[in-house]
Length: 139
Length: 395
Image 1 (tube, rainbow over the protein chains, first blue to last red):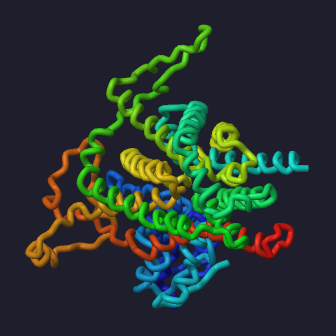
Image 2: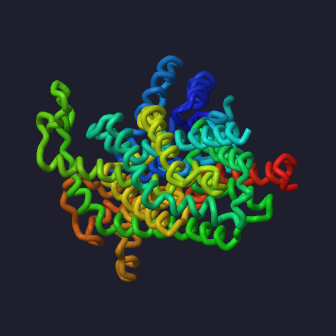
Image 3: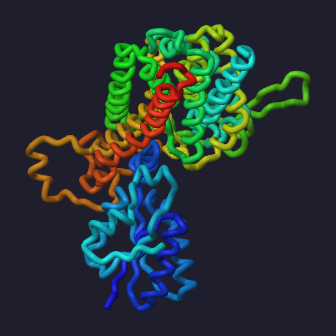
């Protein structure tokens, strides 16, 4: 019985697809949408602007809000409830370390273009290889 | 025939310059345009002027290095070879722009010329070694200088740079007369003017530094072979950069993905200053510098210095406070612009940043590797073409 599902999301369409899938497949489960902020960007400005911001918690929340907004819309359409969580660090590793205590991770297969591929590797692959729980890769 | 080839060479050089203008205006004037202190047109004009000054005064030293010293025999820069080298530089920049992979133009140019030198067996390894050594040393200097600023001076700087922006344009231009008259907009305060001068001044310094190091990337092969005279080449490159600054830079200034403009204003100023000074210094000794890598290490250094600020600890501190150390998401000390801060080491442990995850060495390594992908492609591509395409006669 799958009762707790972790859905890591960024701003990509693939992440939205993953959430729709999770909502439809596990309507009764407790869904947690996780956004990882502060991952590597081309000049590392994204992560460093969090460190240098007036209030780091606020800055992270501000980054995550549009993603959670979209997640809530998707959840409302599919008529399921979600919880949200933020974390800090390199997406792959951070998702893996947050997967403990969940029954399943549902993740989109890939997000950005060449730049993010070079910077992050494939996050879904990292999660699939290292997560302590089963992983469903949505494409 | 030669005239046609020269014209093609100049056109490719103009294409490279055009891309440089587009790519550099964003980081240089992004903060100023973002803060609404200058319009995009003014930014483009300032970019063009200061790029030219940098290119004319110091930039020629780098043109000499790339065009005459990096290869033992500048005669290998035949027109077809020069065009091919410039083509690789332009293509690499283009690919970088399309895929959003930032690449150092200087590293790309050195790579393409080194590829030609390798294939024709005329690469001056001593010069190449000196350039590569500086590519390693300069980012480390940038990191440490920024880290020191981040740790000891950032809070004080932040206080001074507290820019209270008023609504409406800062400067107004009255075009009703024969000569446009520039005046201050409504609500402009004295302090704001000082802040504005700083932000715009930093942009100008960055434009200048770009001129010193980047003009060579567009014209070095043509000047090195004697196809173009140095001064003529510089003027052509600067016109191309200006075209880029007035056209495609409008878009790059808008790109929210520009990491440097995403930084808080104080941080952007520190990073721009440290990086620009390093780039100008290297150009002055004839070394083509990689702004992208230096700026990245400066950004990481600043953040790292800032985040470790509260960690001044003696051995006893560590053993006493160790058990209390808490790791949570985002408990970073909050620095509001203008806020009074306790001296280093005396902040509440609750405020100690838990951002260690952001300073993962493997993450930094990935970023640096990514920035080297485009230069690497241009080096290998140029080498393979010059080595194996019989047309160039190096096989």
